[in-house]
Image (cartoon, protein in one colour):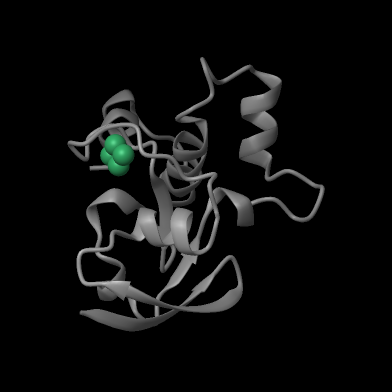
Length: 131
Ligand code: FES
């Protein structure tokens, strides 16, 4: 059985037919071809899949796409302003804030949300931000 869903992704209205078990990360990657959001684990712990839903960072591997009908989603592809990187992307680039880079999009999306909500987060708040 499939379900029709609509949402706004990176400022554009999108629609799709998905199975009930389709995760948000699968919808983004496989239906919309927004492959900047990665899957780094199968236990919902790593955060590589972080995107924003209605302005809050979430793990897109732990949400069903059908539950997000009508929501606003922001992915790493929508963070920059054209060719102008988001300040967090600039900071990661300037400070080489990556290792292999696989999880960097998720770290950037989580960091943007963290600093939007906590201007001077503690080490604990940083580690525990994306539950
Ligand atoms: Fe690891 Fe989502 S892929 S938390």
